[in-house]
Image (cartoon, rainbow, N blue to C red; front, side, top):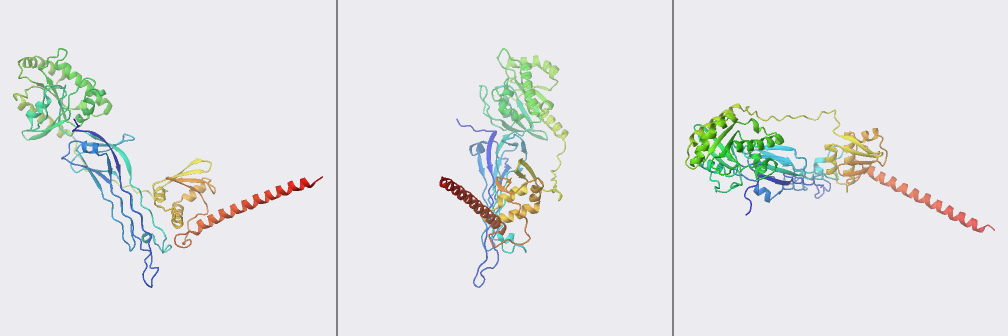
Length: 488
């Protein structure tokens, strides 16, 4: 049978790419060069995780792990900007924890209806040549490319948001108890591990309304992955009150209420030590269930004093079948939940602190990876390289101007970089040419740059001179051979 509950899913999220800017010149009759009129590309859409209270499982995302946002449209002539990429809104259940799949770092904890998190940002749209026009460059012959959207893998983990957690061995009557105290209708049967998913129920005790979670049965070794415990122990983390549900009607000779509780407490302690969830500090109650059975009632009367003396927790004898003791248990749980809520510190509104980069900071740093090999790190240089159309010499010259104004050229010279040194920025590797300094005026016609043409011409002249040198050396060698043969 197909699974109906999933509390962990791996998503491959990708933001939309930004649209390319447009390189266009306004043309009309008697006005062939009316100035640049290329529009900007639209920004790519982002992937947004949003808490949807109607969802209780990650099953849909488990079946559809690839989530992509829409791409931005390219700009067009006549100053028409491209459309923005469509945002991808992904609904997740309340209590979803988002982690980075590669590092395991927790990125956010989505609690509360409407809470959202941008899992993958869309790329910026490229500027058209109209936006790049300036008094120095009045008619740019190039436009900037759109940036690719952010792409990464994330892990979603669902942790049930409830006030009370019912914990205990399989078939202890937890599902029956939650069905008797609330309107929840969990699956109930007389065999172990009937409950395969956490069930939630809403209980009203006087003026206090709280939620109860029925956690699937735990067994020895649950914190190490045995049974269903490891998969569902995370659902206990958010609960304010833990309730040990003990089956007093069990006929297993090696089990009794005290040993059952001690076994569950060991599993909680081991899990808490690994996850630092703070479970050992949560208030606890003990419920001796199934006292409608005569032998169970006798056992409950026998062990009630021992449990109180051994653990110091309130003990309640109840029957989910006849509803005996459920009213007293409900009010005791409501009081414990109310005390926990009062003890919790008030939640302060989130404050966003903006820390602009100081003007004195360069915004980049250079790492020397070889004798004449350098890598430039920095958000702006890497973004500029992505935006550059390397088939357009003027665009490459514009990139050189931006890097020079940022101080990259001077920093390379200070590190001893020579002409032809390998300089890597992002995914691109260049041969550094010290002559490509920032220019105060346009360099050549639209789409060209005289500095690059000069560099190409110098390289061609060097190759011609090398060929002439090698040809002269060959002629001299041949002439020497002939003169040797002529000698008697």
